[in-house]
Length: 228
Image 1 (cartoon, helix red, strand yellow):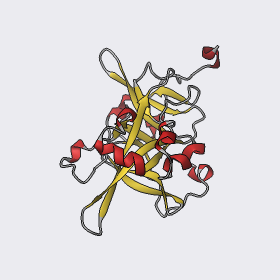
Image 2 (cartoon, rainbow, N blue to C red):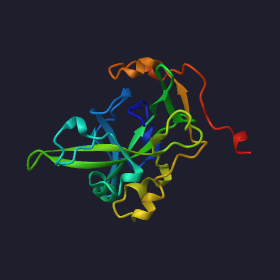
Image 3 (cartoon, one colour):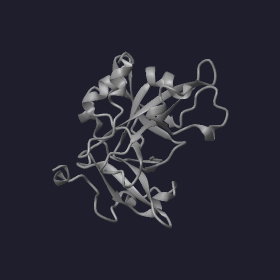
C-alpha cells in the first residue's frame, strides 16, 4: 500500500470547474504521512480544496503515531474508526501519482504509479474532525485501499482506490446510498494506471528533489494485446 504521494502541477480547474477555495494546493514530489495534504470535499453545495492532516485522528485516539494513513475497503463498515466517516465524511486527494514498493530479495524498489496519460488522479479517502477546544479543530484523512488490479499486482497487493472524475459527485455527496458507494470501491481499470521504477532516494521522506519522479526504467502498463 502506498505511503507517499507525488503532488505537482495539477490542473484541477479543468477537471473540477466549480472548485472553490482560498487555499493553495500543497505540492510535494515526495509527500509522506503525518503531513498536511490537500483534499477536495463537498461543503455548502460547492467543491472545496482544503488542507487535512494525513493520518486519521478520531477524538478518542491517544497516540498520534497510531493514526492510520490508509483504510482497507473491506473494513470500512466493520471498524468503528472508519464506518461513520465512510457513511458521512468522504473526500478525494488529488495527486499526480503515488509511490509503491516492490519487494525484492535484498531490498525494495520504489515505483511511481501515475495515470498512463499523466493526468491528475483522485484518490478516495475518509476524513474526520477532532475538536481541541469549542472553537478550534483539526481535520484529518486516510486513503482507502483496494486490491491491486492484474496489471500492477506483480508490484504490490493493494493500491489506493481511484475515483473517476465523473463519479466525483456521487462519492462526495453525503446523501449517496452506501450501495452506490461500495460500487466505486473497485480496482482501477487495467488501462488506467502505469508504474515505473524511480530512484531509491525516494525511500527518505526528507528527499524533496523533483528527480523523485524521474524514471529509472520503462513503464509497466497494460497492453491491449494482453486482453486478446
